[in-house]
Length: 369
Ligand SMILES: [Zn+2]
Image (cartoon, rainbow, N blue to C red; front, side, top):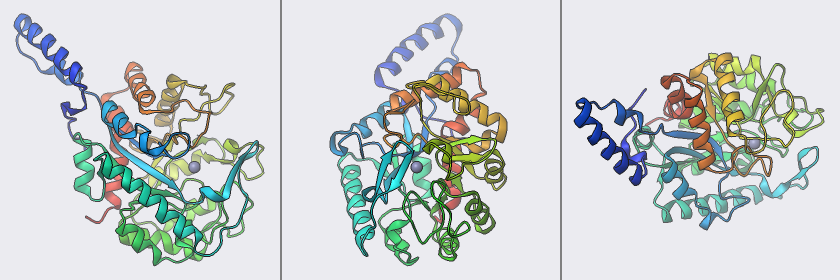
């Protein structure tokens, strides 16, 4: 799929200026649309964003304005299903309390309602169907309602139906609290990957038309999910290193590493790996991206393209999820990452796949209609 982006991604001033330039040059050199086509911005998809959920107030976060202003086609807007029960420490994020029965479900529904209120007020498209995905790539800005963690199910697969009816189309299986779904990267494993329920959840998502997101899963869980899934799956956000993370690693971002072998395995199943917008004040080996370093982020993206192929790399910023350690913290920053990819002379077809096409493809492959 390689739809042509429409001029609606321009800001109006840019269009007018370009039109004037085009008219002027057309008089001199004969009409050609190539100059106009080059000035059209590539749409962007973000597979993992908490914009307006933590460091900004949702109502006046500016998310909708930024999406429209920066040509952001699709944002997987990730509700954090276990946010109330976790805390950030210098060793990473940990669980600090145990939810009472019913609390996870109530928390999820209230958060999803708040997101719905925002989306309706801002007239953003809620992406529910394949046609909605196409409409966003063609120029609308759309939100894919998604959850970081399947905790709201409270262990019951049937509870996915109600979430689907409320618009959920993308589900990350695990996050930071103990869950009947399976193990996660940052604590000692107890399920040997996914539990029986977790495996059934992968099947259920497939049957229902919900994209499965394996971010935070252990390598055993990734292997098991890939063996079950009949459509491509994603790893929405994180980074890729030679070997995978271990729950005993000293820092949170170390634990969250995806091994190159597993990134390749996700790719071999037609899936997509998203790189996050993490940035360090003192970037070290591995993830060499500094604070506010949009060029460094672009370089990491280009490097992963070389390792696993342009059809399998995407963006998953984790805006507001990475806290103050960000290389991008809004969509103006993210636009500059894509500009850097263009400056680096990556082929336009590569940039299109990475910037928006790959997420759109797997989302549509997961959807039933
Ligand atoms: Zn995460």
